[in-house]
Image (cartoon, rainbow, N blue to C red; front, side):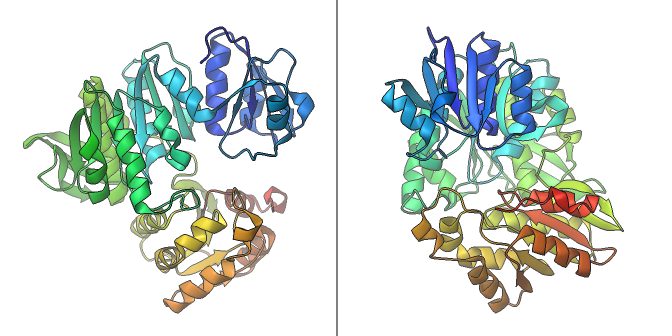
Length: 464
């Protein structure tokens, strides 16, 4: 895709994935320009590397010398820069196509699944860096210990998340693929679980015969998807029938300890600093993938034990007046439930306040009852307006956060609807007591509430 290309313009360059691709192209000596709706630290980092960055999107942002325009899936068809690129007959490609083109030149590793992509890819990237493999990676969260959310390495390894939205992961042909789990999601695009399984099955079939799929052998949907696989399949899970499984699972003051069993043989102890079944499964996937890539086991073991965590993944923001403040990216019912389970383990006996910002009206409508059930485990749930992204105005009018509050209350939960983040912050200031836990959850801008409450500075709060 990039042969003979001298200048690439990015529409929506501020996203983690797009900025990662931009860094990679800059490292190759390709000129980069781009735009995004708002400024950020990621954009400032790209400026320092030599990219020409615009805040706000307009036709004039695309330089005359542009050879190729890259756009994200979030860009609407009426975007002025996309319109200008079409009018000028410029080559236009999507982020996933660019990611696939870069991965095809390397030993590619793609981490797929409804949940756990970011944590799993981050753990594997940490192990590869510590083993001296100098990998490149693009992951969906900041891992400060290894340079952030993306890295351009000199080694042959390229680790990336594989997103199923609009079947974008079908642009990837990885040498190693991880399938963590498969559930209903992105129902604004997919017609249901059967269609989602068809997409994952096609993704699995694209791993070459000499490659490896690392699959959650206890997830029936994953087992369906790998039925089309041409490659070797290695399973992981918590039961003895898996190729990689854990036994002697124990909780400690930091998280979990377990004994690894590989194909019936015990292969030593591991520890991981985050509690929860989902985190244990992620770590097993990483061990299996690292083995497939030839990463020496001692680096994998040490990297898991010292894993520094990922921004907005069960991230402890701070403590104020003995209130523990945590922020998390969870925006699907299963992720919410597992996150609250981990909070209950980490802070037993403490009252838990959850501020959950629903992400997308369509997702909220399709999974309404599941969302409600997952949030019942919080002592108090505060819900602002749904974060509006990608949906139509018609879809926006089909459901509101008040509908979710009613469903939570119908199941015996305590939920309050407060439309704006400012109102939520004011409510927390009035009602949150010392010794309690505050967790903010969602894929929108809800994390600003955690920062604002910690700092006592309401200027941090952003409202839509």
